[in-house]
Image 1 (cartoon, rainbow, N blue to C red):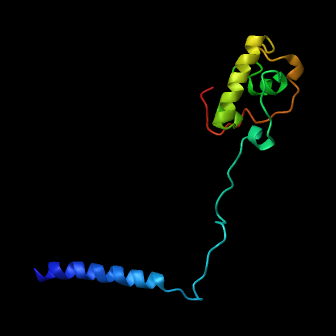
Image 2 (image 1 turned 120 degrees about the vertical axis):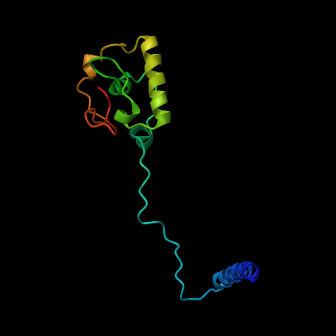
Image 3 (image 1 turned 90 degrees about the vertical axis):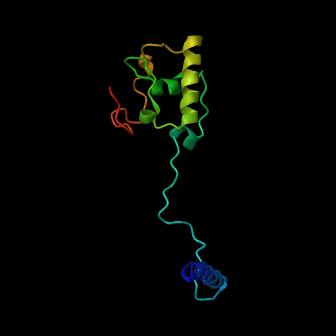
Length: 129
């Protein structure tokens, strides 16, 4: 019975010691006001980084996110776009195809020589095709 009564007292005394030691401020304790040097920079997608506004009339930009052989829209793991920009690109490609500005199956041959924004053969995660 006496052991049980002493146990809470030791816990209280430990808490008091910790509280007292945390209140002690000396000039010897270092102050860490600097940022974490090991923290990685937050990566931005190419559209957010450059601030490009995606529009359905800009078919040259939209065609870079579409396969030149199948007309399939590349996924986020290939284009490395953020979720919001990927949804905007998909929506604008659909608008351009409905307006007749882009073909739904083949890429316009005039845009085949455009510079690549990403590497199709080196996705972030592997894919099945």
